[in-house]
Structure formats: structure tokens, C-alpha cells
Image 1 (cartoon, rainbow, N blue to C red):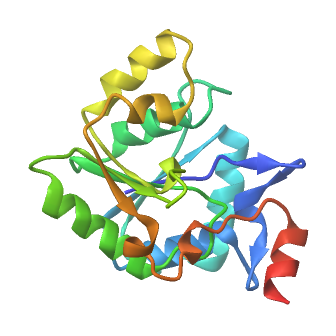
Image 2: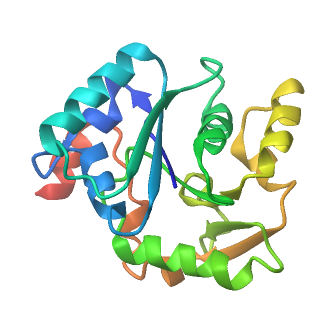
Length: 201
């Protein structure tokens, strides 16, 4: 399980923004708690790591039901691809579910369904990626294999930083978003506090 907490916008760290009186990262950690043995939280630098450790200690203390590792990007400012490869290095399992820190509505149903999808299809596919009817995909709500680390290194060495470039190189099982989460709320992201206020009204 890989949960990235590296998104920022408008000068504010998204994972720290409050949703239902808790930082968004706490909402996500609580959702995955009963569905993962390990979680790797990939952050930008030591400063952000210390902030997140304080947040987790305040809201969760010793209550987490999984092994949590908090690590920093191996290379700064290289986008989500470097976050994925950093996280994969610390995950013991063959696959990792990548989740963004700005989607606090990620549901247990989504997590269960996407894990079930890779279990049922892993003989033929090494990646599960949610897809909308429009053709748009959700690369940061997807499962990636350990073996994709070498592909990521190759992409980065060629100046490619987008996750879609990685997906093109993998044997992907594209699954409709509504099959993973009928409400589709797991894919809702928030960019600033005003977005949250508007949603909760």
C-alpha cells in the first residue's frame, strides 16, 4: 500500500487541510486501516515529514492497525513518478495501491474492490487503473507492480515525469470507476479549503 502525501496548491499542503474536522491524510489512513498491512507515506522533505508525524501522532497516536513508513522523495520536484518509485522501494508486497492525499472520500468499498480486481486479474495484468466513460483515467488511484521500478527509472532518465507514460508501458486492466466505487466519491479531490467548504454545505 502506497499513499502519497506530496500534493500542494495555492501554497498549502493539501494533506493537512481539514475535512470533517480532521486533516485529509487522516481520513485516508483511517479508511485503509482495515485493508492494508503496510502503508508508505511519501513526502517531499524532512520538514514535511516532521509535520506529518506530528499530525499522525495527534490524531492517531498508537491506534494505527498497520505498519506505517514515512519517507521522502529520492529526488525533489520530479512529480508523482518519483513518489511512486520511492514508495515501491519500501513496500514489501508485489503490488502497491497508490492514493493521493487530496481525496479524503476514498472509501473502504473502493479499496476492497481494487484489491479484488488485481487478485482476479494478476495472471493477465500487472496494473489496475480506474477509467471513466469519457476515456479519462485515474493514475493516482491505481495499483502498480514492484517490477515497474525499472520502467520508472528509464522514463525519468528520458525526461518523462507523467504517470501516464508509465501506464503505457504496463499490461493494464482498465476498470470502470463505478465498478470500484458506485458513488464515484472516492475520486473526488479538493484543491483548497473553499472547495471543501462548498462540498460540505
